[in-house]
Length: 395
Image 1 (cartoon, rainbow, N blue to C red):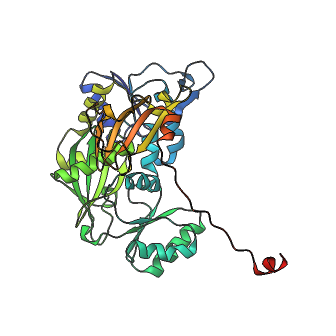
Image 2 (cartoon, one colour):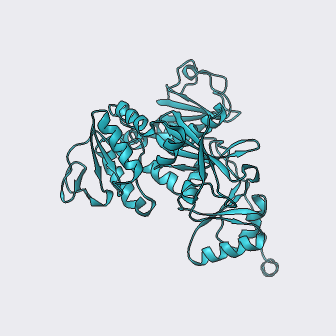
Image 3 (tube, rainbow, N blue to C red):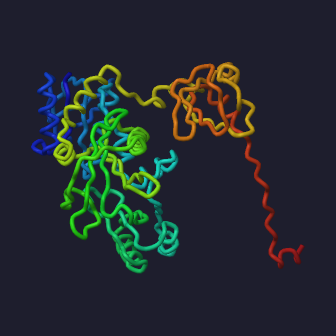
């Protein structure tokens, strides 16, 4: 396998470990500075240049994109994708995870446990938002902060309002999030590769610090995760569109609360805590997946006129509830069901004998007109506004 590692920090621990692991396994590997690429859109085929010369062919690319170059870095990764080069973390996945608001919005739709969160911009909405997440103390987060930077604990409502107002005045967008007191300055980092957690550690904040990041002096220890925590970590990474990710979770009274999904997790802390070859596991996974690169399903399937990808919600009163896919009439209407989302579970490539249930969400490919016809019409009661009194008198 010929692997490119995109990194501006070739001497960083994580980059060096990944490079060494690839070389130890007999792969060709190069660390390429992300900012030295040029995207070539002038030819018939998508292409990239590196340091002013055409890029040689690669089997896979592993992005280590820093937050300061997210836009350009993901553009380069996207170009690799268009060239059918395998990447465990797609450009969309990196973008989804990098923006804390976007990540929270996506995860909230899939029944992932998270701290109560609010996002507002109007000054008058700040206090009600703080009350909705449980009141002070409250955590304030910059949308694109990393390593604990831009995470503030406000002990009182007035202090929180002042901090948020100051940040808004500098055009900073912030999340307002409940403070999970039972976590006691601790959190869990699970390293997800593919569909499993390969390593996990508990991070504990130093002294009175509530942020447990290793870069802020936090200590680490290996931890064995329960199936509930493993499931939450793997589902969160997959929902984000990441096959290599660090998932940070708080230990809430009712189970795991996902805080963040990191698309470029550092390896030093977790390898030191667990004594596991995490870098080697990442390289082994990429090597095994090279022959089957992920593709943008919507992009590939939506090129036929009149066809596309859509999600259909099976309402309780739908006539297909209780019927198998084979008897539902979907195939006769030129609609193929790719997956069924049922609660927190996913049924991929369902068989004709699979029985449909109320509240199932079907990811389908087929004729757009047929799929639109299956969406129930929403009846909206017309609202007749009263005329002003003066207008009624004039009539």
